[in-house]
Length: 507
Image 1: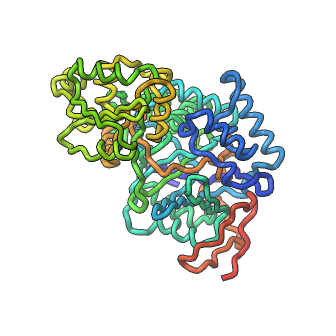
Image 2: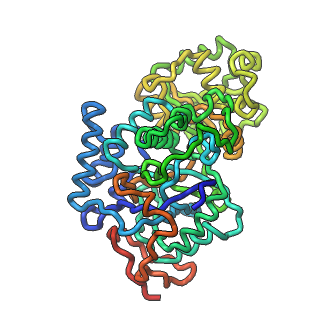
Image 3: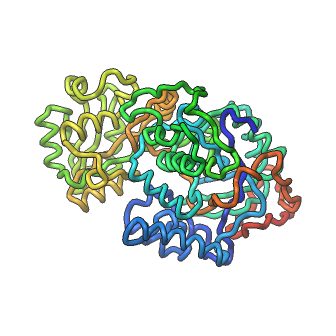
């Protein structure tokens, strides 16, 4: 494998064992930061006693108790055979489908690199307390419990990694299930050295954008530093600001910097790698959605009064439309209307803020930042409204970040606060800023579809890198089914045991 570009390494996936759980759908979960309400956690916990939420969001009286519960739970499930490792290191082809939406990518252990290397590009800042929370959990469990979502842009030729993925999906999957959100999920393993080499040859020419999982990526880098003890490596701390200031200042080093801060550590350590899903967005474009804000301590009436007093935005009372209609009004605004937000307290009324004061923007948004950063709705929300007009500190008790608009509206209604509904950012804007080394305000975007948590985990105590090179991976067992007709959809396999290969299908 080359050290340049992306290095996606095979690993022995840890997966649920059929017969030990009700169904795969019952033990999966959305990513930890999407499960934001206590009732969501309880719903997942009661779906199956072995639901993965008990690992990614363990419950307890304090942080130490929560982490201890996760560690004990993982050990118990392994000892009882609920979770078992696959027999050989593999990359995994992962497919998500819902209606006309189809996404395919590769799950593997990605070599970690600090931002100054320019191989993995962050686009948002992170919150140190969240990084510390994830780091404690990862230390306690000794595992990567859920993959990050990363995107790269292939050449569109249908060769290399894309060809390997398309060949794999003609075989019988390791597993197949459908979750409550309507998505079907399928997983295949890649162990053939020739296919692994084909994937590596292409990925080594590309770099990736972190689409979802900035806090977990920062956690990977922090733990790499702790375990590998690399002297002079600024990767972890830099990434906690993502190698750039959250206010948009560029990184000091270029994308191919190879100075003392970019020295590479021992590739034999499993802490040198992190679990990711890599998606080629030329073939499978990601959806980009907004992340909304809830201000539980700011009543809507006071928020509107402050906006009008400061003459910060034009305010239009939309009356009491449905949520969908109100969001349509927000999305329908012309670009000339400038930054725009939808405010509600969940009582049915919506207010549209648009056409911000140019004079106020000049005073509050720093002019030496890139124009694309200055125009972001999230930049203006935080610089103008939250910091200046409303004086709301960026603390968990003062600002909630919620992916679903209806959930944000409900949260505002329950707290007596204000929901600020946002518009999504275009992916090309995100990538443009990331390639400049400029980070957006945190929680500016929500890329999807996100991978389901619980389909495949990665243990850090079984040695990923030493057995993971394409040249040393074992050949795929010939018992694996490869005789499906092209384009044929193999029968769903919800419960195929880890450690076994799928039996051949009759053609």
